[in-house]
Image 1 (cartoon, rainbow, N blue to C red):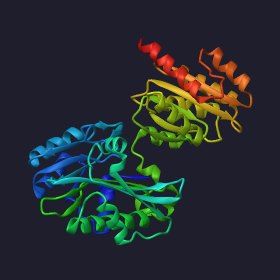
Image 2 (image 1 turned 30 degrees about the vertical axis):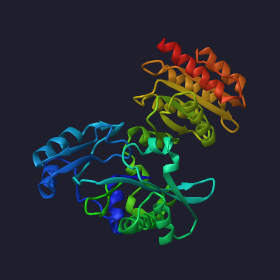
Image 3 (image 1 turned 120 degrees about the horizontal axis):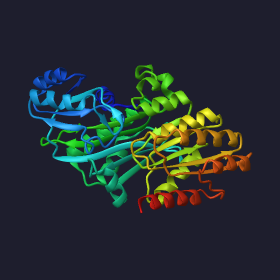
Length: 380
């Protein structure tokens, strides 16, 4: 479950991490009242997605009137596909430096990884990709404690010393406490700001709770309650796993590994996945019809790839569902289906009779290449 920024900051404050003062607002009037208490503020949409600033979801306001205007513009709008129901009105702070501090899980090694970079802010992903050597990492085995000297050694590599080093190491330890206490799989403070007086403040944060541990955290409610995106709510109703992304290629896969492999190959082909969708082993004609229509409703989708393995899934029912779903789309998208396994011959016949391209190779690379060929032909 992805927590909203204000929820993450509440957790940070409980563990002693300083954050800017802020108030949650659901109406422009509440935003004006908050700004009257806080002075110059920043009005920030509360949606479970990063990149809010570039999407226009974070706007400064010099006074209460402007804060009300910004809230009026944002509330009820849609940012990155999420309806905006609340905004965080937060005091504007002047950061002398912007850093990055994060924790995540390395599933291959079964350990948490603490990461620190002296270049934080909106472009941290680009920094991490172009200069990976600037992101310092410390592996923390399951159940291990983060010792003070370990945090200091990590942060010292980025050139920090003295009181600033001690303060940053303390925040790292506090973030790790949050990570362990709330069964988080992601905990990021970005930017982690240094103020003119040397104090350290969490200007923004991102936290995600392990779904398998939600029974231990009733304070967060159920994941279904927290899902803001209508596509993700509908996916839950259909019974498939769906995660919305920012790309242009919709994906339907019958397994998580198959889906992730397809995502990697789409990226390698120069496109970006618009979603991750895994059907699991319970495919029916109706499930597949709804899955196709759900994926196609993503505002950025230009093409769709369906990648199925018919071990336990009935491929004929899946093919019939794909035909139903594609036929009902208001605009026909480029679509490619790779379906191998039981009844594959009959499934291919169903698809081909409906004019849907089928890739019979076992290589997903070939299916991706066929979809790219269709997209290029469409834009030529």
